[in-house]
Amino acid sequence: MRAPLVILGLVIALGACKRAPKGERSCAQVGARFYAIAHAQVDATADLSAGERTSVTGLLAPMRDAMVRACDGDHWSAAARACFADAADQAAFYACDAALSPEQRAILAKAAAGAIK
Image 1 (cartoon, rainbow, N blue to C red):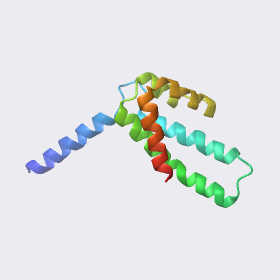
Image 2 (cartoon, rainbow, N blue to C red):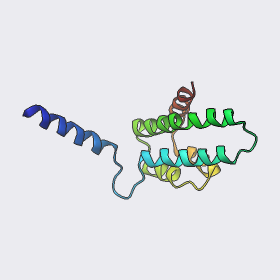
Image 3 (cartoon, one colour):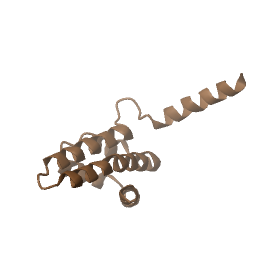
């Protein structure tokens, strides 16, 4: 009987660690915004073959997941998460890099490169 309670406690604790405080953007929202903007960019690019489009689109989910892991693991600030999650377009999204520390930008770049391999 004790084991299910311990497992339930761990699940609740882990879930609480991933949530942003009320009213703040979460890392999952950052990833979702990246995915939406990147997908729209792929859709708007007319000079991709069907195979290229499929290949590029297939990289978006792993890149999104890498971004979410970097955000969670490096404890991005509320301001950085809000900037990324609320970005109107690709240019605004990329401009949010300025809200990250140089170390966080390096970790994000490494994570993204690992997602592409």
